[in-house]
Image 1 (cartoon, rainbow, N blue to C red):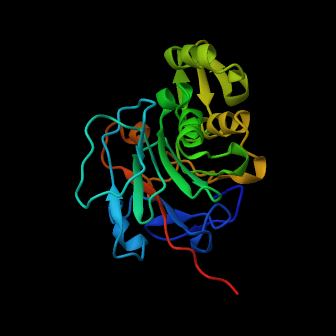
Image 2 (tube, rainbow, N blue to C red):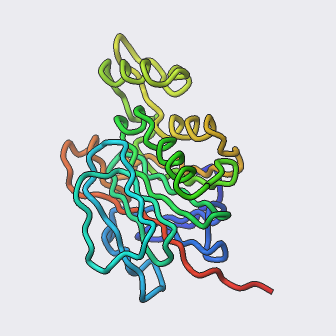
Length: 247
């Protein structure tokens, strides 16, 4: 199960120590199909608030720059969440789409992003980084970006409606597809996200990718493409926590 960086695997989740850890004052996880909603067990704070919203394959980011009440809900559809609040666990749900987690260790801001092909092609990830810069002063050069398991370039064939949008909205579209026939191609969603964040100034060493295909591993992941229906989703999340003191 390859990845471009060291990762830790448990039955319920994947973490990437090189991306973020408790000593950085942040906790994160990319979920698997095993107990996908059991996010509370992955954190240690009794004060934590879990935020989950309705996802609509759009590009809008919900910004939480104030304390969040337990049980609080948020109307509308959102595919990205951003906060500077400690103990607020931002979560997104995926089943082939790309979960993207972002950490700004300088301004102490985190984001969780749901990037399907529609959102990715429309630029939800760079748009969210722009929101972080505008609202919190985040410098792209200081950001850490974690790109989680998703449908991979081994399996994710798309057709002309997807390719047409990609050609219109992403100038380097040929670098993230491999054409397989007339009007069809294999799309590398994770590579698309990686190139987009590099284009806005995120440093190469600040990007970590879990190169695992959700279609290939039915024992670990739900997959809409493989199963032909939504039988379940994986939950991924990120949360600012208290920094661990070091000597």
